[in-house]
Length: 212
Image 1 (cartoon, rainbow, N blue to C red):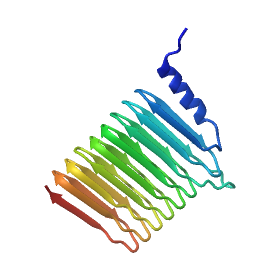
Image 2 (spheres, rainbow, N blue to C red; image 1 turned 90 degrees about the vertical axis):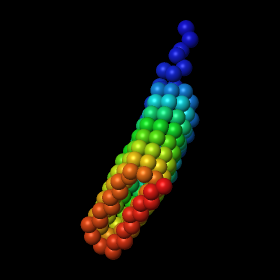
Image 3 (tube, one colour; image 1 turned 30 degrees about the vertical axis):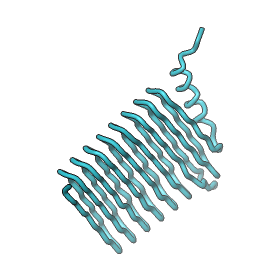
Image 4 (cartoon, rainbow, N blue to C red; image 1 turned 135 degrees about the vertical axis):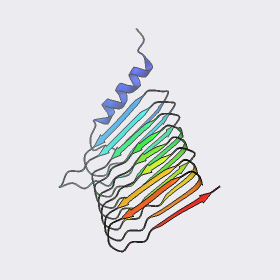
């Protein structure tokens, strides 16, 4: 009896995701698929590419306290109603999420070390939740289209941020707590909301809104 190709691709993604300590690339097309990767320490890298609709991608790159992880992870999704989640808990980090079309959700999370995150969402109704925690930070989030929302967070150390939105009815919320800071929110379009909140240290903040 012939196997359902959709079911088969789900199983492949999940089983491959529990192989630890191995750089892994999973590419997928169709709709309703799940790709999951989990790695524990050392020179990990991971990439998930999905096209179609209603796909879900998870990457977690945990590191044990005695073992360093050299990071990078990436999710690229083309289509509608995707969910992308990367949780990386530490060390050299570098995260990229690219989503295009509409109603996609990206969640990043990180805890510490050299960070850098780059999120690019192009379409309508895109949502970003980021949360970083500490060390050299830097997040660059770009959203193009209408009805998009970016919530960022961050907590401490050398910070950065930079959020750029182009389109109507967009919302950007940024929250930074301490250390060298910098925040820049740029919104171009109509009917937007932008907040940047900083708690302490060397600060620098800019919220620019241009009605087109």
